Image (tube, rainbow, N blue to C red; front, side, top):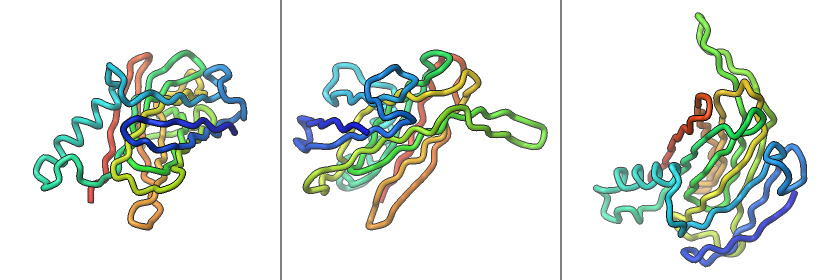
Length: 189
């Protein structure tokens, strides 16, 4: 496990980003699992960031504090890089979280769906040092995960604490061929 310190201008807070993949080598080839942190002030917005901003603006337009209303959110964009790996861009609102990504093959059958693992579970986490009370702290990250050529979906388990309780919602994102697919999940008060 390696740790990478990141300081964002908006939050002026230090985070540790830890990557726990099926190997302990950080920065090897894409199929070995990597996490790259993107600057929040980047010129172009990722599809995940666009999805989050759209949801945030629509969800909080009627509330007195508007977009400053405390909330948690996860937006993810999945795209196949090659026959052995997927790229997932994340936007996460909230401090101290963990993401577990399991590539899947989902087949539709006459009696429903059949889900099979199509790669190793990859885990990434972010934890705050010091005072973890910054509302709506936002981070962007890109995770490269190993996946078989048959993978056509990912299941993301997002673990975080809200109001003193551990939360762990799961999000499944289907994708086709090399096309990117984006999904958004938000939690409002």
